[in-house]
Amino acid sequence: MKTNCSHQTDCMKLIQRILDKEASAEEEARFVANKGQCLPCQEGYKLEIALRKALKSNCTSSCPSSLLESIRSKISSILLLILILIPLFCWFI
Image (cartoon, rainbow, N blue to C red):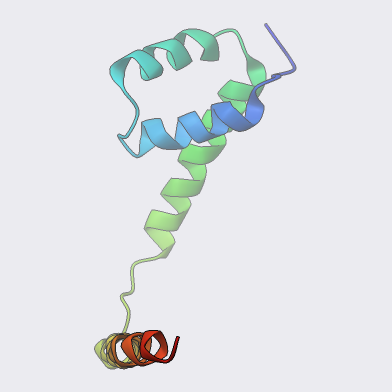
């Protein structure tokens, strides 16, 4: 079993894609075959699952609706300002 992974960054990205259900079946099959032979990939996979489980169980509260509305309002104001200023800027050029 390998104790060093020369593609560890790519493997971690692939693990995240697999767990997010974004990886293709071929990518997932290739990773599963490699994981059995690579200790860093096995540990990375276990770590990512543990982190996701911990986040899911500890992050149960939602954002207060007043905060959400405040953020939406500010984004709308900024977008409106951009829509007004871009044509004015282009007019002066």
